Length: 483
Image (cartoon, rainbow, N blue to C red; front, top):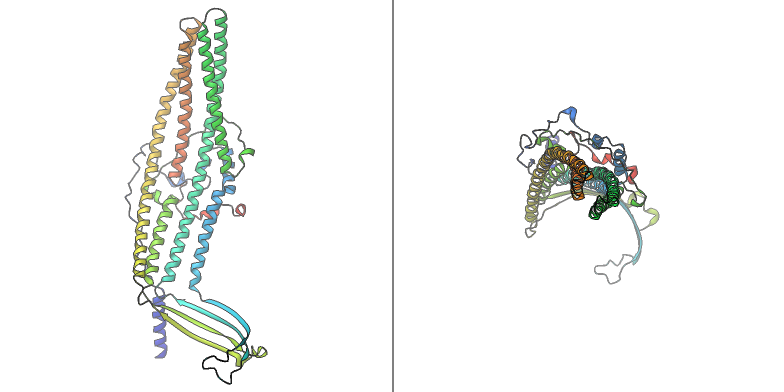
């Protein structure tokens, strides 16, 4: 009979220890469309199309960019800081889990003391001067009756998972920033090459105009116009070179290098625009690290409601202590000097002026706030994908239109120069044609660069990859490089 009662007590104790007062967690609802509005010209992602989160920039087939991205992951200081922030969150999880186990401490004390002769109720036989030595160990264990510790651990674990996703967001943002800077740098190289070629052509045109002026065919006004045109293009070249230098400095900072010692060789080869399947909106919620982080923070806030509710109920602490006490140092470790004590303590607040109620209300409000932030992040992610899909589609059309303008402008320049050589028109017509041609050609380069930027932004909007399984993003940061 005693064994049955003991078994029943232990079963009830175990049931109480496993309970949780946190509300049943559900991911906040958010409207999700069946497909993207701007995805008419984009294919749906299939498993074979999915890009690995690591190395998504290899789509652009730029070996130098591959090297720079690897340097960024290894040496970028913002990424290191985000990594160590995640390491802190992991330590907080272990700190919370320690409450599942007894807290054991040991200590020793030795002192020489004198007791007051006028101490109240002092025994006349008690010595005035005496030694006191204690050596003992104590263990305390809080029984998790209402799931306070369990919910605390759950909240810290969920927050750590959010930090893991924050680390992924930071890494993806830095990778995208580097890729955009690189593609903009390549666009600047093309702009510089175009301006240099234009300057060569304008110098030849100026030389032709001077010869015509010396021969009495062209006016001095034509020479001034040709000189002005050349100076304008030279100014544009200087500005383009300055922009390139700033992009080069930005890349240096991203990869953890000194801008004074860093350089990138010019390259005017066009960068191909890769096709990126957009998939469906529902997959976006699983891929984007910022969405995952927002959802994990909702879960953490929900667990903290259980922690706040547990404060309403009694806390049970079991304790045990033992050791040795003696006034004679030589006899400290003898059996007569030993002592021990076993006990328990049950405590509950009877009145706290509404503190616990306010804590529960605060926890509920924090959960509601986290839910609204999650919905905001989700809707913003859908918007970003739609924006980038629309931008890519429209820029593709604009590129074709701009190229038509370039072809027409080149024809205008040839016709204007031909008419000028025959003396049919003034050099003003040539200048106008050259200005329009240069503007059109620079426009093509600018639009293609913007296309590439939008392409990179789409990858970021889609989460940087296509793997749906959970990823420990901290493993993507070389640990050895961060020490």
